[in-house]
Image (spheres, one colour):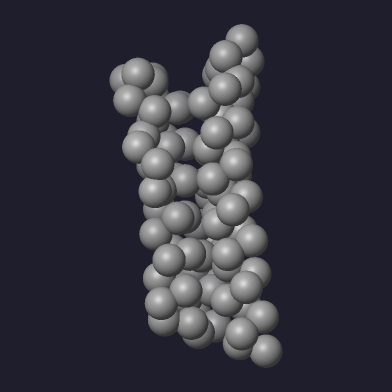
Length: 90
């Protein structure tokens, strides 16, 4: 997992979004290592929360979108990884 965007950690909406993306990332890794309907569901829930946090951060950072874009890219990769796990369960 990439390093957090440390220069922005003091800014609450950004820190919240980073934490949410990190939790989603960990939930996806959990689903990958222990595939089940529960772990996949938990990962999707975490990703949805991260999306909401990113939307709030995006509004907060309307003039500096780069950190939010990087976090969205990471979340997008996690969403793809989770879809692979879900396909294994079918």
